[in-house]
Image (cartoon, rainbow, N blue to C red; front, top):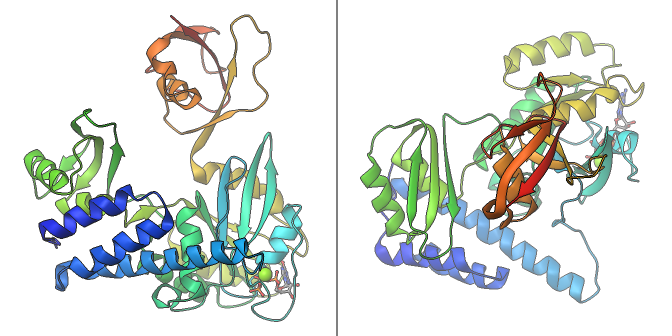
Length: 391
Ligand SMILES: Nc1nc2c(ncn2[C@@H]2O[C@H](COP(=O)(O)OP(=O)(O)OP(=O)(O)O)[C@@H](O)[C@H]2O)c(=O)[nH]1
Ligand SMILES: [Mg+2]
């Protein structure tokens, strides 16, 4: 359903999107919120803005507290390593046990519920990569609707690159998973690739509007999309539409409200007596929607698979760059999305690099001959070695 926002509200949203500090953003969002008309079509948007305001309030409060040297819980983390993965689950499923089993982090494991009150990070090694795992405080039913910690916990999931949904095979695991999935849905975090995807990449002033449709527009045409974007003063951007998109999907992307985060399910306590039947029920419940990894933190069964499963779910690849003339490639890989090209790699190294790009040489097992001379559109795969040549 369209939001049909008045022009003043769209202008305010634009101002909010330009805000440079959390304080400024908060103020603009509050003004924006008061300009949204109250009808069915704006219901989801109003809930989202309320959520954003609440999370910003917490962020500002936390920064103030830290500046005053008063410590207290920490909810905003710098990402470290190749990706940040947040562990969500109800209390006592063994999140702290997992964190202490597979990372260097120290956190309290206990038989009492709600032991972990604030997020705890730790680094997990996988081959030559490190993933930052973050234990979130326990997720309770109704988290997405509450004004308190639940929203912050879900905010962590929004900011992360991936999510571990953790359940306990000695309890009603499908029921536990149902609660997590429901809260994620309410917080508009998708854990499977959506039917349509709209990405808006803002460009510098004067770049103009480019709309690229890989799939199909469902209930609108290109002109409608263009007008919608212009209404929000998005004049310089590249917009990529994949799948079957509706005009609502485009508006959703403007508000960055629905997001997709890859996820896996960790079913802990596989050592417990009823674990086998519970795992079967869990499989039935999920119907292949997400990978399920049964583990036991107690016996360490299954833990060795964790890094590889996270890597696969994140859908990323590593590429190693090599300077012309050097014998060995770099030790630290560049992390790219699966399907990235040589041009994407060049852009990641330096935004200007692509302009000077001449050609690349790629070493890869799948090629009949290595190195092969390739152009910018060559699609890279995991562990490719790339030598970039400039003009
Ligand atoms: N049998 C069995 N018990 C486990 C396993 N992993 C953890 N536990 C126990 O489950 C209880 C809760 O573990 P925690 O790691 O503290 O759970 P949590 O999810 O961090 O819980 P809170 O932070 O309190 O919400 C502890 O008594 C652990 O010893 C396992 O693989 N098997
Ligand atoms: Mg804990």
